[in-house]
Image 1 (cartoon, rainbow, N blue to C red):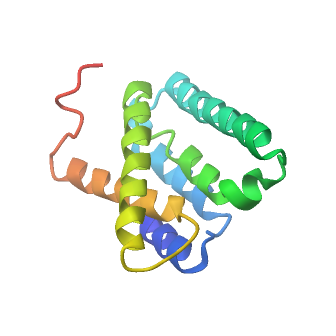
Image 2 (cartoon, rainbow, N blue to C red):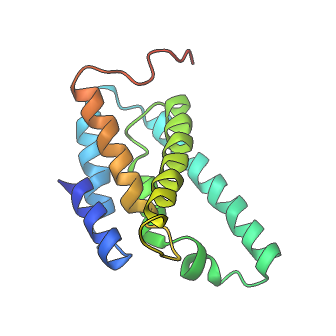
Length: 150
């Protein structure tokens, strides 16, 4: 339900309510409580922080205005959404999930552009669809990481 709300909100208003990512984070901690590793949570968070730092530096040098980072290029809600996903997977699976999810988001946006022009990507909204698909597959007994040795 939270993922669906994030999807609808991001698609319609290009923003998400501030309390949805913390709720999602709490839901994922509760969902993974039995095998939750605080070390893994730390690694996943560090991975996202490192990626955002590189993206920030790139935007700073490429466009010269660091204030544009959360205003034009990457929404704060998108960052909070990604951080909310950190309890969901092991570190190796998280990196793969983040990468595949980001490419899937770009693919979804590319398909949408065929029908409707929009200048920004509702990253959290599209990624919530990817996450929902992953969770539904997992719930149905399909492990999408079964062929990947990490």
